[in-house]
Amino acid sequence: MVWLSILSFLTALVCAGLIVRWSRSHHVVYGEDMPQRFHRGDVPRIGGLAVLIALLLSWSAGLVSTAFFGDPSALRMNIWVGWFMLAILPAVLGGLAEDLTQRLSVRYRLLLTGLTGVLGIWLLDLGVPRLGLPWIDALLVWAPWIGMGIALVAIAGLPHAFNIIDGYNGLAGMVAVVICLALAHVALQVGDRALAALLLSTAAATGGFLVWNYPRGMLFAGDGGAYIWGVVIAFSSILLVQRHALVSPWFPMLLLIYPVWETVFSMYRKLARGDSPGMADALHFHQLVYRRIVWGVFHDDESRQMLMRNNRTSPYLWAFTLLTVLPAMLFWRNTPVLMAFCGLFMISYVCAYLAIVRFKLPGWLQK
Image (cartoon, rainbow, N blue to C red; front, side, top):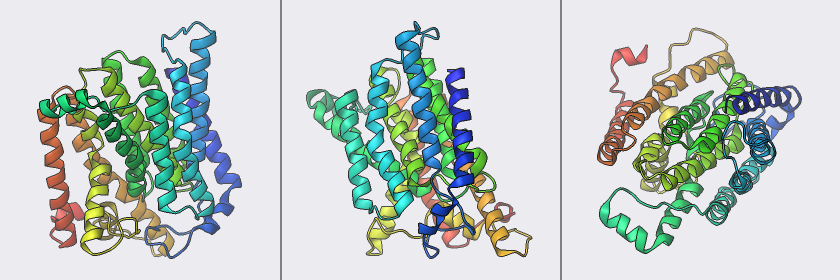
């Protein structure tokens, strides 16, 4: 696992550096007037390509080690890892196509993430086997296709959830790293070394990308990067719950409650205003933090001010994420406690959102 992670990190680091060096021309297709744009300058947004190359290389190395070299690390990375790689490609390539052309609509990207979900269900036999509620679990046993449907919704939706929170340098990438490490920790607790290796490689590849992304914002992950994080984490979460009865299905739910609830709340907010849920705006939680909390910048140059505010926004959201990750890791087998923390987060999120909108913030939070 260590060597695969090192390979993944170094590959992403080098590939991202090459993209920064040779691919700056891709910024020209990204409109200056987009509401979610919070940067100045010419920044390529195909960092997801570096992460994808790193993952395919490291996971293939694990496959080769298991198949041809006697699996010296006992990772048991069998043929299912190959199906894993194949299944994630439609969503990821669709995201990269959008990054390169800016012409792939939300509808087609949603169809491609749905295709990834179908491939995952077909090739990896994915399905949510239980929800920790006796009467629903009995229904899932009687009708396993319902669990497959839940898995399809999760796989199709989570990439877009990561895309929504991917607004500032280091935000979505660090959230993905923390979640991957938490999932890998529990995978190791239950002896699933192969799944842990996939997750640690993902965290390492993301770390290689973050070297170029945070704090200076020399490269953005784009839709391709967000979709990689979304589908890999969705697949891994379902596999972890499927394979190990000890793991509560609410463990990954609590880990992912921030991007999931951000998406659900954003859809509600837009529908309440009579807007399309797919319409981009600048009223997400992280954007309000940027506008109304991160204000103490002491540079005259406008682009430098924007960069500094961008850099200072992400740590607020990292701390917000840790409020869910820590209890999830402590109580990964305890469904009632995990459900209670999910509810607590949703209430806290809405209260914090309303407080920011109404300018009712404590003074220390604005320093």
